[in-house]
Image (cartoon, rainbow, N blue to C red):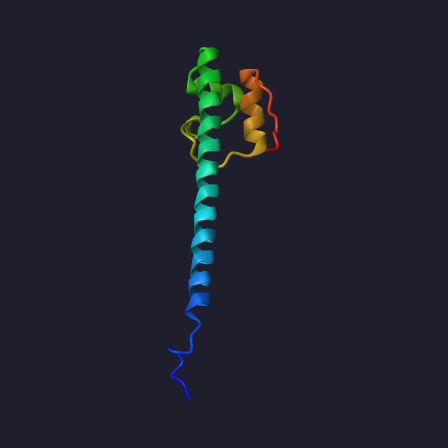
Length: 101
């Protein structure tokens, strides 16, 4: 009768640990990609607003959104809805497009 510790399949334990680490790394990579996408979107909104020579307050007024929402959009924070992005795009004269990878 063994003591359990010696009977453990350590190679399987190592494989399981590696799989867990890979899953964590995959999730972290996905989160990093989302952060870059938000930053790219925020840069586009910021540059489009500047090209129209608008302030955040003016954009907020014309979209019916709060200035805080515009600030979050331009800083890459938050998770805007389609309707929010559509309002901003309309005022800035931009089109929204979903591009599949």
